[in-house]
Amino acid sequence: MSYDQRLEVYHQDCEFYRHLDKSKWGRFQTASVAQGAVVYAVFEINKFSSVERLWIAVGGAVFVLTICAIAMVDARDAGIYLSRIIAFEQPTVRWPAKSQFKWGRLLLKVQISLAAILNCFIVLKLLGNYLGRIP
Image 1: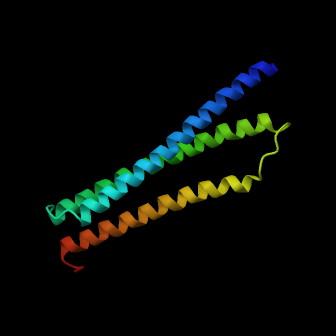
Image 2: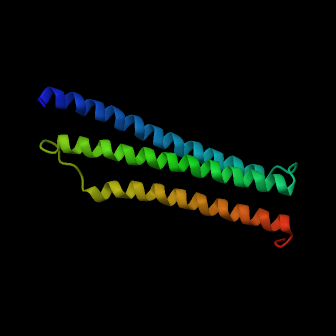
Image 3: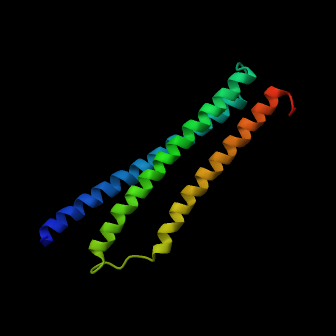
C-alpha cells in the first residue's frame, strides 16, 4: 500500500473515530437524561400508583442500561480506530502512555455500574413498597 493510500485510510480512521466518540458521549448524555426522568417520575409525580411506578422504574432501568451497553460498543469500536491511528502516527508522534486512555474507559464503566446499582435500589424499594415490606 502506498503512502497516499495509507494517508487516505488514516483520514477515514480519524473521521470514524470522531464519529464514534461523539456518538458514545451523546448516548451517555441520553442515558443521564433518561435516568433523571425515571427518578423524577418515580419519586416526584404523585399520580402514579405503586405498580405503575414499579413498571416505570423497571422499564427505565432496562432502557438506560441498553443505551449504556450501546455506548460501550461505540467505545470499543472507537478504540479499534484509535489503535490504527496510533500505529500510523507512531514514527512521527509521541503518544502519552496507554494507561492514560484506560482511565476514561474505567470512568465510563464506573458510571454504568453506579447507574445499574441505583436502578436496582429503586426497583427493590418500589417492589418492597408494593409488597408492603418496606415502609
